[in-house]
Image 1 (cartoon, rainbow, N blue to C red):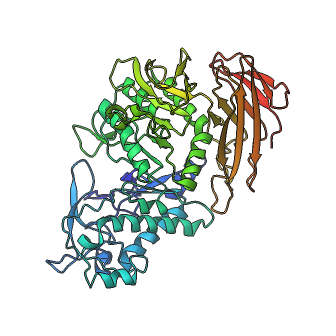
Image 2 (spheres, rainbow, N blue to C red):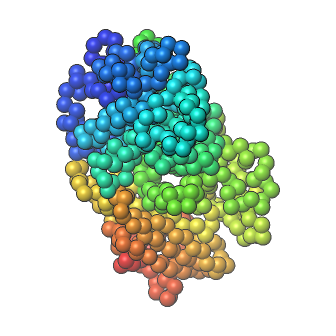
Image 3 (cartoon, helix red, strand yellow):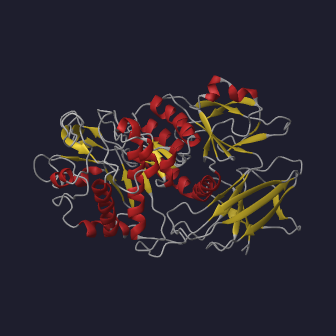
Length: 546
């Protein structure tokens, strides 16, 4: 939910955080429940400033919720974005070191969560205020330590304490308020601005108001890789671009194709109309009927990949390893990864250690050039093209990959890797206690493998799962091993249940397109072939594995 739900019903029609436009939303709770009944969780946009027309402005000013202006000795004021494109109004930023400001924000978020809003979207929180001398209250116990205040020798200016302090405290206030309503559920707070410390409280971030263009799509990859190195590891971009013209069908599809391999996948925009800057166009997955089936199929692939992506996020949580990784991650001995074309990070990246993803960044192009990194001494290393013509490619070379825009961006799998997959639809997380939409259970798991052409070398992959909801829940691990000869593929599976037991009990082994070899267990038992999927991949079943 963008902040339009807070637009005042009467002039001036500004956006007033923690209010509802009752003309548009006469029954907020009923509206929220209707979305939940369709399986849709809601995230509410909330901004850390209050305009002078806000019904609580005078109360907040009198209570010391804003910064103090050192010149006027009064509540600090600035012009703040308020309504349509380029419009602004006078108001004040919340001083999160103040008791009044912090607690007002906490109660506002808590009320939204009690109403049924699932997640919070901390927006416009860079604290681009105009004066370093604005004074902080420093009277909330969560703000700063007594020792820190003593070292400051009485100084309260934001130039010393830092704008980012407020970004982080905003995250903490939102996090703690959501947690107070559901103490054993993980709060999900999205934040536009963040420090590494903010991610103690905020789950995710994104690149802000990006521009609809081929260059904008290309540059987003480098931003994701940089963010991951800065511990912002659930990171993404507004697919299709936030500002600028509407994307063409080709650009939109290309962006969706690449975006499904990012940590955070979301379509969001505000494209003001030339005739009325308060009215904006939107990007919708179905906006071009001629590509809607292709967009739908791509998003369904995202759903299928969620067990893999979720496991990467559990790994991030445990070990601070980013899901999206630079091409040279783990291949530092390969001199080619240090060349400018790859250090820049714009044209390709790894999702985990299994999938090498590229892009096409010009209209009408149907090929892409990718570098396939190689570890020193691993002369047998190869990658497998997951799209036609599904060829094996030697590591340590640049390869030209066919990539028609109606099909897919280039995606290569590292030979020997494996990725867990689930249903290609929305399912119910095991830890959910309510199911108003009657979603199906998460009771299917497959593992896509990419076997070597021969050699008999064993490869091993471990993925992680938990109940997806609770704080007190445990994490279980699942290890899949396999090797390949010219005639058969040998597999082995070892679950390690640490309290959490998934709903699924069987495991499908999914081979690449065109793979004809049989599949046997390590004990020599032939696995039953249960069919093939829509793209022609053979599927074998490991039954009763848990």
